[in-house]
Length: 166
Image (cartoon, rainbow, N blue to C red; front, side, top):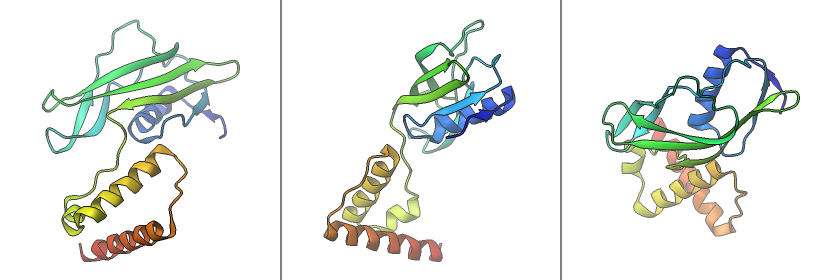
């Protein structure tokens, strides 16, 4: 992956995307923005307690750098204060560039299934669909037997058909 040249504002926006949606161990390597040493204070995330996307915030101490190797940061739902997500990451200035990547996240990154799709799938198909999404997000190579592959293709077709009717 090429090394990106980022301003402090660009880096802030990029860190939001990395934390919210990138897979573990995908590396953001960049130059510039050396003065930017804190993670974003706010993120957008689905809250299981609120049952909707909400803003999440973290406490940022003044004069603290998060750009010193391995560390973690916890975010809480601003709406209910109950939901929380913790990111574990590596962020450090290397010889010619800076590197940032997630090494863990709890709860794990997942793709939510829309209510309409969930209602349209039977229990077995919904379980298979969630498994496929989870495996895709974990970056694990998926080896599927022929019968399972056919089921996955059928689920994919069903999703396309349901999408046309919504």
